[in-house]
Image 1 (tube, protein in one colour):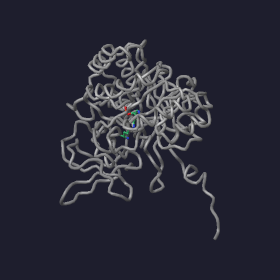
Image 2 (image 1 turned 90 degrees about the horizontal axis):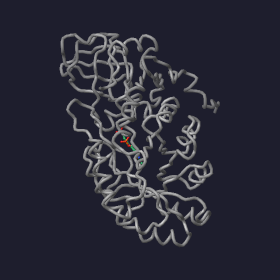
Image 3 (image 1 turned 60 degrees about the horizontal axis):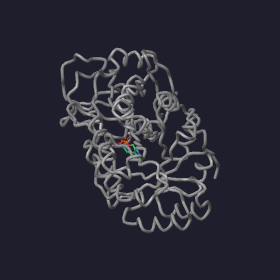
Image 4 (image 1 turned 45 degrees about the vertical axis):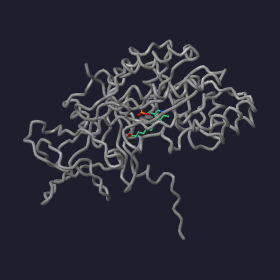
Length: 403
Ligand code: LLP
């Protein structure tokens, strides 16, 4: 069973809320979460939703209702999670490259923090000793993930404390009596092969005996879902068997909690970006379809060469032709080159699939265009969860001076 919105539902939402609009199907988020809780024994495995994929407060609140915890990547995400109703004990802050004061802010809010530099670990030790138990993010020197831009565990990655610096880390922990309760790695996004996680575990297993206060091992997120029909995806059941099997076979790790931080897996397939066609431009090389969107709304195709399925929801039965789907901003914002689509006309609704993760979240007001509205659907009811920007949103924080 797959909880997909129907074409009719998408057309109705465009009618009711206008375009461009992001739509999230909460039934699909629920289905994905259930896949995880069915595969992973909740007594051993904790799921932290990687909020950076989609931080709308209503989505955070829904994910909390499902029973998930939340992983944040900035102090503002931490504050949004708390505002959405998460108790601090269910909030994790996996920091990277931040000033120490932000770590302090999170600790004072009662949130558990993964620290990713010796620099900040030393500051923690100097100021607080072992007062606040923390986790450390390690760089395991493993190349993984769908492309280099989203690979974070390799030996040139900025993320985490390189495992080769483990002696320095241990010295610091000893000197300041810091309590390390979690070891964290996240090797990348779009990981289709469960054995990548086992590779990571093996790196961590060697280190576990050095951390007597350890309670958990955090293997990050990155579970690959399908963007295209037939795309290889991660097999969650296999992942569970492999990971739990590895922990069972390694006595010092057996009683540790296992944490995961999926973002895309939970929300990507729930999301759609509905746009409308502004005009059609025939040229010798291709036929352009220009929509009322651009990389200011969905940057993944341009930034990562990511593929997003596109449908013509207004004319699904039209004769198939090839179109290059482009945006209306003043950059080469091409969503798809020569993509076969049912005949496209002015005003038709083009819908982008798999737009739930890193869609709205990476949107901007470039070209002084408005970010889309956001709508959530649950059990057949659609509700607005963010209004489309207005001119006030573009000027609110500006101070116009005469010079
Ligand atoms: N945990 C940590 C520490 C992370 O850095 C990330 C993603 C996740 C969890 C969640 O990864 P996911 O399950 O969503 O793959 N904007 C890119 C993806 C960048 C991911 C950054 N970190 C994209 O649209 O493909």
